[in-house]
Image 1: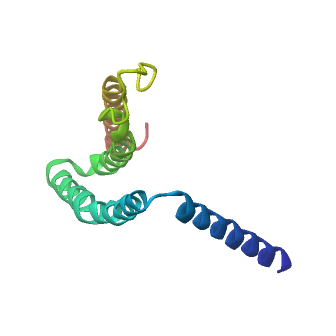
Image 2: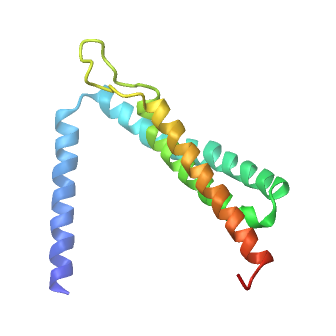
Image 3: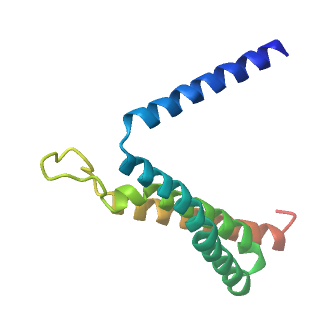
Length: 138
C-alpha cells in the first residue's frame, strides 16, 4: 500500500510540475490553441468518425457475406487507425522548403501500399474462413 501511495504522490508532483511548466512558459495564444485542440479532437471523433464507422459497418453488413464481416471489420479498424495517425504526414503539415529532410518520403504511396496489403490480407482471411466453413473436414 505504501508503494502505491508513493507512486500516486510522485505522479501528482510530476503532473503539477508539468502544469506549472505549461502555464509559465506558454503564451496565452498557445494555451488557447491547445485547449481548442483538446476540445475539438474528441468532438470530431465522437460526431464524425464514429458516424462514418457506423455507416460503413451497416453498409458492409448489407453488402458483404457473413464470412467477410470479421475480416472487413479488422481491415476497417487497421486502415482507419493508420489513416488517422498518418494525417499529419499525408497532409505534409510541417514541411518546409528550407529543410528538405522533413517529410522526405512519399507517404501517400506508403499508405496506399499498406492499405492494399491490409485489404488483401482481409480478403484472404475471408476466403480461407468461408472455405473452412464449407469443408470442415479439410
